[in-house]
Image 1 (cartoon, rainbow, N blue to C red):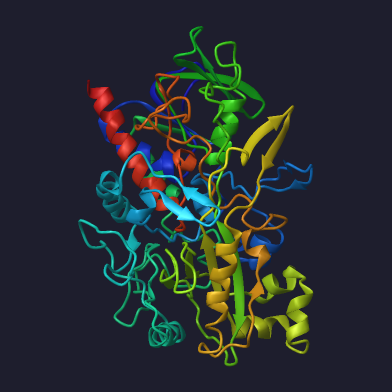
Image 2 (image 1 turned 180 degrees about the vertical axis):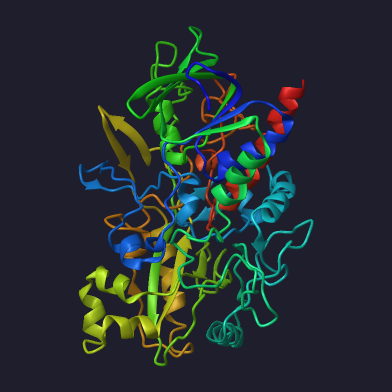
Length: 525
């Protein structure tokens, strides 16, 4: 147990995929590491698998109210637990495409190039895939980047109805592929879970907490093994970091102010790493203003909180004419339209399967359109005939898309970009409903992201502290160290200059492992 005023070699703020992976990588150095997590362990119970509790009631969401730029209120859909948002993520772990690291023209503007190329990240992608038990198969995805090694784990096998879907899509001229998943699964030849597999291939993997710790989340993969193996690693839960204090010159963080229970505590470290999530890390820097940093810590560029991105996302359901008996549905994806199509010269995005619908979720949607289609079909029968997809297109960084404080209020200002691409991607999927044996049309699944969350609100958050070589236009240098503070790093998705159209978590993990190596070099110097 850490004592207040303790000094450590490294303090890591946040236990999500970035911070947890970095701490896991650095623990073997023997340096004293303190991890500060504002939440606690997510309770394991049968409620973890209750679709009404998870999606309709939103029992695991943080009970906070934020404000939109227009003054409207919403719940941000954040999850303050050991493991961060990965406790409820879908564990789709894909690499950004190699072209995503260069400038890409979209109809609404240019997705900017990264200051480092794919080749720098590739070895760390390989390590991240092995660490997080990513199951996949090279060579299926027509737009996957080159890799130095095969996946360490075989793909999650399709169930019969999804294999049939795969075959139909291939006959339509597409190239469906096994969705890379971070999952602790051992499979029999037919794809079923072996006797001793942690994962049992249930229907509550995607978006649910896993009560049996079979999802490869940051707590299960990094935090708990690090706690068990390294006495130099300390985790404090219920520890909200209120601000970072620097020396008079503003060049070094010398105190980390923490509220734990009703107590105010202070800790210090040679190096401080923020990994609270792109939104929360920006908020931490903004409320850590001082005379040396009047706009917020490391914010001389006025870029902290700006260039916020989240994918343009749609979660949709088609209704098949025949029952869909699939249990574990999230095994297939389509990237054929990622960089464009025969009728559109600009990138469209990615289509992937998502979790099977449950009757309680459909009932909770309360969308009249559901009933207008098939008014005599009960919600449970709709769920039995449903097949579900997650569509995402790239969001472009804009300085005016930002998170900021207005007094004590948190304000998230977002103007959507690239919406035409998202509409066209949806139409591509809609055109496939007839070959798939579904009724025409797609139904929106708005509760998938949680109760009272604007679609795409805070899922896949990125870009609020971008990295780069110019301190005037970026917050972090190429090692993800703050330009203006010598001992402060940020390793969540804040550093992204652009977001591509694949799920960001694997890139967060890969970058955290990369930054950990730079920190190891610094510690050894």
